[in-house]
Image 1 (cartoon, helix red, strand yellow):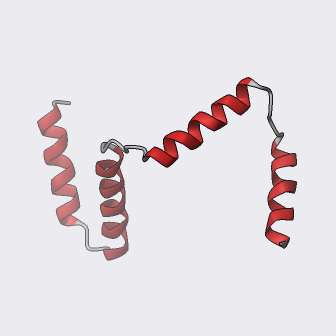
Image 2 (cartoon, rainbow, N blue to C red):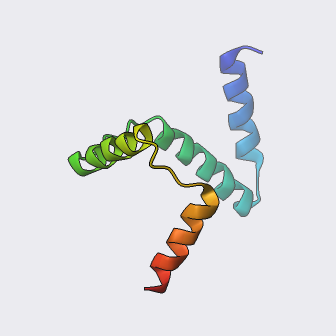
Length: 78
């Protein structure tokens, strides 16, 4: 199927939909797709946090998922 033919079929199908909930779902999908194309730029603080995490990884300072969950649960109790 040719690219433009596919787009035309999609547009025609959407125009025939009467279900508002379905239209909202389609809109959400299209909106998320357009957001996914945007590049996110890290702040200086975020870059620093990533660098620290990579250093911890290189030094073997790692936690299993279970250990991390335990740490988070302890932190939440405080």
